Image 1 (cartoon, rainbow, N blue to C red):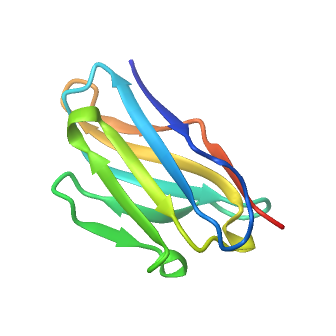
Image 2 (tube, rainbow, N blue to C red; image 1 turned 60 degrees about the vertical axis):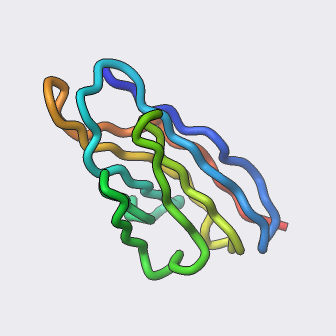
Length: 118
């Protein structure tokens, strides 16, 4: 069994910052890519940022220059630092991990709500 647990969501004013964390636990051989997705009401889930095991990253155009994804391989954890938040960033944020080995597959967290509002 593998679990991904997100934390760090909440309510923040426009221009503010939040840091999301997602820790993977359970029987893990190796985690390859990790990523953050988000889904706003009435919209499809979209990729926000992704990071390979070696550290290469890619971002959605809408968050470039404002969000930073990072990871700690020793802790099986991925982070998303979100700065200069806008109301349109409001969504449920999900982490995603691609595992290799005996539990190979793609796993999702349960989601954490981020609300940007004054």
